[in-house]
Image (tube, rainbow, N blue to C red; front, side, top):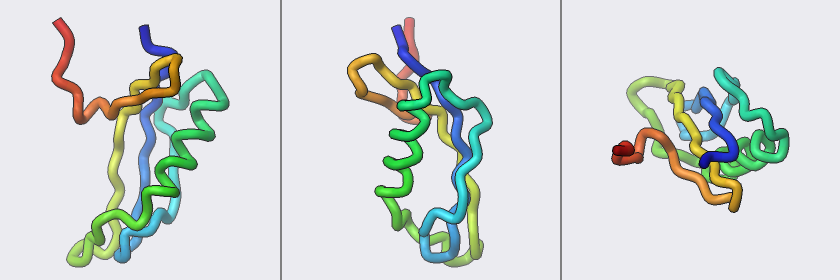
Length: 79
């Protein structure tokens, strides 16, 4: 069972730095919200969207009670 699910929108500048984050579906666990935001900011800089100027991407985070997570975009699905 998943402990938390969250969908986060991240806006990057032309250098791949995080400009802002916006929760489309925030996890109910405040510690998970804080950890996801910290993880996203710590991962910067992202690959620079040089031709776009800035870019917004959305990921859904699947969070296990152990603290392990997987991005929904990287899952293989479930039977």
